[in-house]
Length: 473
Ligand SMILES: *[C@@H]1O[C@H](CO)[C@@H](O)[C@H](O)[C@H]1NC(C)=O
Ligand SMILES: *[C@@H]1O[C@H](CO)[C@@H](O)[C@H](O)[C@H]1NC(C)=O
Ligand SMILES: *[C@@H]1O[C@H](CO)[C@@H](O)[C@H](O)[C@H]1NC(C)=O
Ligand SMILES: *[C@@H]1O[C@H](CO)[C@@H](O)[C@H](O)[C@H]1NC(C)=O
Ligand SMILES: *[C@@H]1O[C@H](CO)[C@@H](O)[C@H](O)[C@H]1NC(C)=O
Ligand SMILES: *[C@@H]1O[C@H](CO)[C@@H](O)[C@H](O)[C@H]1NC(C)=O
Ligand SMILES: *[C@@H]1O[C@H](CO)[C@@H](O)[C@H](O)[C@H]1NC(C)=O
Ligand SMILES: [Zn+2]
Image (cartoon, rainbow, N blue to C red):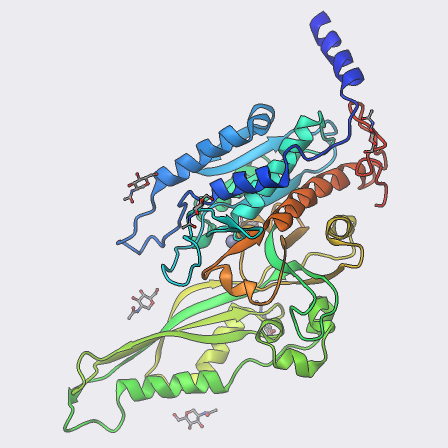
């Protein structure tokens, strides 16, 4: 008992310091580069040639233990499905709902060509760190852990519980990672104030035509999807005596009909999506990134038919991928497809479907705090607009856990960087990486200082630190 009191007093007196980052940018970069060397690649379970190498995943988890000793000794760690991580940093005020910071450390496979530096070497050159996962999504995992490590080093203890939840299979849909973490929270009746997960990268000026300021399209919602294949069977026959219509011909007509009869942009999308609202309709129509945000898209992704140049195919198959905009839904799109194809010889077999996500209300304190945290780190002139995440994320598993889901990749990029995320030469600047750390640090502090608490003080630390005395809520 006495010992405890002595320790507390000691803390109170000696730990008067501001919350600073504890490594130099170079050291942060080196540690991040090291994290990119682990080949934590997710392969589709149907890809029998490429089993997932879980040894690499285990080695990555051990690496985290050595790099983040304070996180591992102060937070409660739960390993889910063997490889996914949930860290709980208990807050002192249990009536405050938790903040959850989400990411994933699995990555997509690499194409061997096109890389200026090997994808799993973590090469640092000219101020950039190269490697698969540099953005998607070891960026979030590593920078959020660095932020908490720095806060712990300063002796900070939160009022609001903070969770760091990192999946290991997002790139194949998260069936064992975030789906199971979410089930764990549901079983414990945990409801979060907000979840922040990966999303659109922050847009540098010029990212889109006419964009003059740094802009964050903060993802408040994402699309649903419908994937199916179209199959046409026919009797086949000899190439010298062809039937009037072949399986390939019938299928081709269906595909052309789908491409010609695209889904129209939906009414009122610019009130939901402030990014679309920034541009004149002509610009939106002629930019694939913006246009995709206005409507359900149609993409023919794969076809297969025939075995020989002189033999008529018995079967022709095509795969089609729709991303469904908010306001429409799976059954609406399916019915529309049947109507457009208008040919019962074309058999539609659904592979997968998901409804569009709920919409996070931008008129909340949580939205404001994320926005202010972004502006604090990326500049006060940064324009943060309510928007849509262009792809799907593991947040699909959390619709029941919170009303407030935000999606953003805390890195400023140009349009061409988008292609590197699942392509080649994925990279981040050292300064960009350090900003991500500052962003999560700021967000954690904001969510502790604000949201009705209004009290910036924490007994153990220096209240003149600008981050801690930040009452701009
Ligand atoms: C408190 O924080 C301010 C601002 O960061 C700093 O200038 C000052 O040195 C700190 N005081 C102590 C005692 O650490
Ligand atoms: C899996 O990774 C380990 C190193 O983590 C390596 O030694 C092993 O060869 C890899 N296995 C395969 C099948 O590539
Ligand atoms: C791999 O990374 C190391 C350490 O950063 C670096 O010295 C080396 O040049 C890199 N190799 C290549 C081929 O990029
Ligand atoms: C699906 O969307 C259509 C078109 O917006 C709408 O008429 C229908 O009510 C929706 N159905 C469901 C189940 O939400
Ligand atoms: C659908 O196909 C039938 C013939 O199979 C044709 O009579 C009808 O006009 C078509 N409907 C549309 C909307 O094109
Ligand atoms: C079409 O999709 C279904 C459902 O995923 C699948 O069972 C079937 O094998 C696919 N068809 C072909 C020809 O691959
Ligand atoms: C969310 O809750 C609904 C209603 O209880 C349930 O049907 C659904 O399966 C839940 N979703 C998830 C992802 O757990
Ligand atoms: Zn990702």
